[in-house]
Image 1: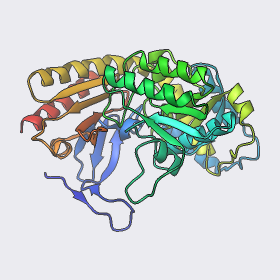
Image 2 (image 1 turned 30 degrees about the vertical axis):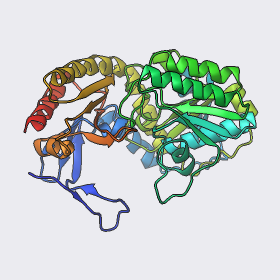
Image 3 (image 1 turned 90 degrees about the vertical axis):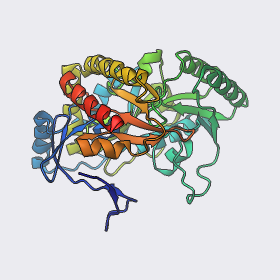
Image 4 (image 1 turned 60 degrees about the vertical axis):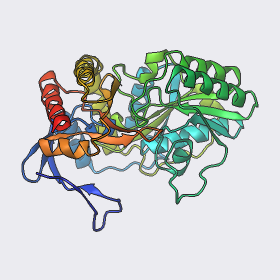
Length: 398
């Protein structure tokens, strides 16, 4: 079977793979022909329990049968229940939650909070890091396309900390910016997901946090992609001992069973930006809240952060063996967030894998180097991981 990219007649997207997915079970996707495909992408860091998890599906169906929509101007116990759960497991002193529809919107709320809480304009981020597609998120990230104009004003970028030398340069750039007194906040991912699955030096973010606190700028972590066990800890901020003022969540928050985001802030930040627009028509509908609560309870019950550490370490060792054999140029990762740089003569690794029954994602690092992303559902077991890695090896040697 040869897969290829095809245009869509009515859906507004540039292209889609010529494979229609009709079902899924665990870490397996099933196409219209009944072919099983091992899912090493997990919806790009979305999947926690994989597909067809009945406990979550039943929670969604039970809420759907009630047929209830609650206008955000009312109270509803489900909102407080979810917000309290998030605050109880989040790092640091986060105690208030803004309701959002997506991860991109969660980043938008972070920008609003930083500017409202400090009375300043400038938002600093790391060059080449993705934060979403909405205009503000695209502006602090790398998603302002060539036809979209200049983006949101007052957005500054510091050097991507690819090496220790780059990290020192980035810290010097940040120090110069915050000393001007007009920086509202700094936002970035604690582990860089879309930017090549790159891991910053361990002292990078503690030093960033220190600079922000010393100069009155909010320290904001975007964990839309890397939160909820993906990197082997419940939140990736915990890897570096961070206490963010603002935390952005999405993707694995629902495990793919709903559309919901959240922006967590400290009480101090909330008090200083009280009154910003927070009405979200479809933020935290009862069906999405039911999906999210079921997903998070099951995540904690199954202790999937431990599985991410164990299976992720096993996969990383296997990938390092492929690197040592010369099959790939580079590998790296934390937990079940893994990245590899394929050899320069292979420019169709995703298609090769899909032909053989494995789905991986591909993108480019900030410097343009292509890479392959591996972010399977957190329930992945060793046997399925090995089957997928064997397919990957076959694709690399075909």
